[in-house]
Image 1 (tube, one colour):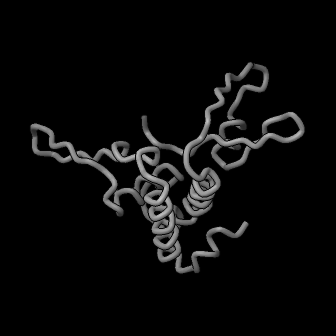
Image 2 (tube, one colour):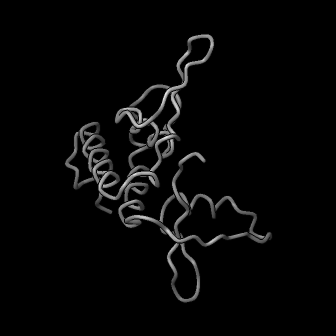
Length: 141
């Protein structure tokens, strides 16, 4: 299954409220008159760190998009760009010789907590370098 920003909510006053930009976008796209199916799953690993990672990608993607040429970058595309730079993919060679990168082959749930933490630290350092800002700036809200 492809990795994308998780839809995270926090429980307050008996309701579920968006905890990250991806959830806000998903809720904004809903038909307000129709029912919604929600599946509650136990999370693995440090979800605060994972949520912070996706929030930072959501903040940084539009900024990088403005700095780049071509298609707009969203948090999912930025996640794949970072995985590419880190070498977190497998390759498939087609009969034509074309090499296809599979970014979904190395996913967060397959990593140990230490590997995820190291990847996220590296990702934040890389993004900070690209934007020419201190790493701490990325996590300020």
